[in-house]
Each structure stands twice: as structure tokens, then as C-alpha cells.
Length: 416
Image (cartoon, rainbow, N blue to C red; front, side, top):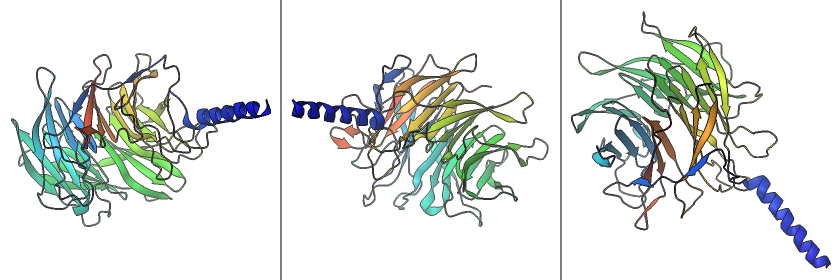
């Protein structure tokens, strides 16, 4: 009897530990768990290329980069896909900026705006600009860093129209395309205020929407995000605000990811501890510019429902945040090299007409082959979600894939 009772207590203890540290899906009454049916593989897929390492999209165009494992004699590439009239994604191009040139950091950061694609090559401190005419893509420019750029030039990149912003952990660099010649010129760099203390990793994450740029910044006691606006008279960029979350004493990872669309910004803090938890889950914060357009206010804090955590593994919610219209996508990815996670999903939140944010979807890569690696990247645009899974298999070969989810009932259209 004593042995039976001891066994029961042992399994009860294990159950409690599992609930506390591993979490669970819960009842999922208020959101849907979705496994996208549409998968995109490159037509020339090879083992170990890690297709889907980064993704971005605009209009009917999707781009995805590779990140071949070290030792493979494979050119790093960016694949371009377009959506057909019958909603099929067809490969339009494969962009290789410098064939045969070893570029370990090529494709770490990519973005697209209309018919222009920007690709970072960190190993050679370059930014490549491709433009499309009809269905043909050509290299328009290779943008070198300024002489005083940091060693991490290209840590992140964003483009909107004729303006590119490049982060390098010490500054955010601005390039502008000239209307007449269509050539690109270096305009300026954005830096921390002269009287600031404890700043580091300025420009580790960047984004741009129209005449507003948001820059993620590390600090010795946490992190912040800085907002810059373009003066319409002088064309100079001026700091408008510094953003930080309310009621948080130490923002451990705040600003690690930033995204802006019109007058709304979302900022991830992948290292935030929620409540008394021993290992961080992470969070994302929404800020909006008020009517006088001079101040920004925090309007929401987003946290995941139904998270499944590995034992002592940080969940990494907020590793990547993407905002479009009334939809925010947040990637949760374990960043520990010591403790394995159970999943790396994408969460979708939507803002209703009353300004309330609700988790609508938890997106996972594969129902039949769950793995802790999960997604590595995410993009949102025009009611479409794309998420890269670099360890996805095609005919038992690990090549990577991009999963597509259409969300026609969610408003991810950018405001005019």
C-alpha cells in the first residue's frame, strides 16, 4: 500500500512540474490553432540550405532567403515568388548578388517595397538593391557602408518607397533614391542623443513607414525604442519620442524587434518575465500616436495564450514582431542553447473597432511532425501570413519551406 501511494505521489509531482514548466495548449476556446496547408519549396531545393531563414512580402510578391550551413558550397540566394490569379505562388526569380562569393551573412535581413528588394550581406558590409521591370529583376545598386559604420552594419534593414534604413548596433543609416537618376545616395545616420547614458546596440532592429522610422536600442538597464520623423521642410530626421513599456522596472529585451505601420508601432520584449515565472515568456507592446501627432502612448500589451514551454527554456515570444493594419504577428522562438523548447509558433492578434487586441490564431508548422525548431521568420501583408521553417522536409530532405496562411477575415491592410 505504501509503495502504491509513493508511486501515485511521484506521478502527481511529475504532473505538477510539467504544468509549471511546460505549459499547455489549454482549452483554446478563444483562438484557433492553425497548421497552414500551403507550403513553398524552392524548385532547386538542396539539403541544408535553410530556405525560409527570412521572409518578407508586399502586394502579390513574396521573398525568402536561404542560409546554407557552413561548409556547403552553395550560393546564398533570395527567392522571389508571385501570386497567380488562381492564388498559386510561382517562383519568379532567384537572386544571387555575387555568385561564388562566400557571404555568410547574406539574406540575414531582407525587405521589399513595391518593385524594390533590399538584401543585406553582413560578411561584406554591403546592401544590394534589386528592382523589377515587368517580371525581370536586376541589380540596381550595391550600397557600401559609410566610413564610420559599425562592424555589424546590416544587422537589420527596412525599405519603404525610396528610403532605406540600415541598422548596425551603433547607428541607423539612411539611403534615399533620387527621383531623376534613380541612383541611391547616403543621406544621414541616426544616433542616440548626446546626453544619453548606457546605450548600446542602437539599430539592432529598425523599421520605416512613410516619414517615420523606429529604432530598437539596447541599454545597460534594459531597452527602449526611438522614433524619428522626417521634417517636411528640411528633409532632416528628428527624434520625436523614446518608447518604453509602462510599469516594467527592467525591460530586459525590449526593442529587440520593432515594426511600424502608419501611426502604430509594435515592439517585442522576448526576455520579459510574466508574473513570478522563473523563465521568461516574453511580451509585445503596442504604441499609437495621438491626435496631435507629437506623442506616443502605449495602448496594449500582448502575451501568448496556449504556450507550450520546454523545461527551463525561454519561450522567446517577441523575438520577431510584424505589424500591418490591425494585425500583429509575433514569433515565439527559444533562444537558449542549453534547454530545448517544445515549439516555435507564430501568434496572430487583431485589433477591433474599439481598440481591443485579441489573440485570434496560434500558427504551427506541421501537425504530424511537431518539432521545437518550428518557425524562424514571419511576415504579414495584404491579409497574408508567411512563416519560414528552415528545417522543413521535402521528400525526406531537410531544405526548409515557407508556410502561407491567408486571413481574409482579418484586416492586415495598411491604412492610407
